[in-house]
Image 1 (cartoon, rainbow, N blue to C red):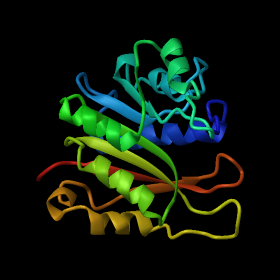
Image 2 (cartoon, rainbow, N blue to C red):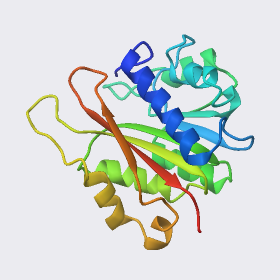
Image 3 (tube, rainbow, N blue to C red):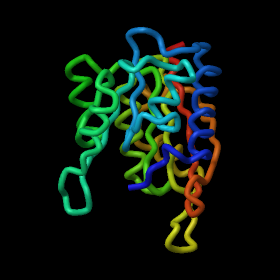
Length: 211
């Protein structure tokens, strides 16, 4: 599993996410009672990790950070990501499991209250794996949420490239109109390459709520 806590390009992409969140919402920190949710990977104590960077930027306090990871290695065994994250940042919230299953459970318990979400997926842009994950998340977001979703624009093992418009198009076909009406139609995007092999496209979806 890639580790991006010491990657300057990834660091700059997160900074850009924060800037977009602040511009769309007019907020500087995430408000009390709201949360930041992410596909977390490993989060060391160093300044380049996601949780440390966002705290340093004044976006959130440690108890507003909610990280989800499947936390399994290629043999299906626990990889220790969540265990280490809990040791490094015991006051944050860590969940070992599937993203959709986790947020479904938290929603049912009335505990899913994001203001900002970062779905840094490893899915290809025009595959329904990405749109299913993003769509299931959008359906559970309260008003005032900015949802960032990353998708891959190319297959690093071949010359294949993927349609940049595919995720938004697939979501338009999957999500009921009553839900889509609450999201801004202007979806901001930007691309970057943190690995040297894969071009990533970030989408910023904003649930403004009913007008």
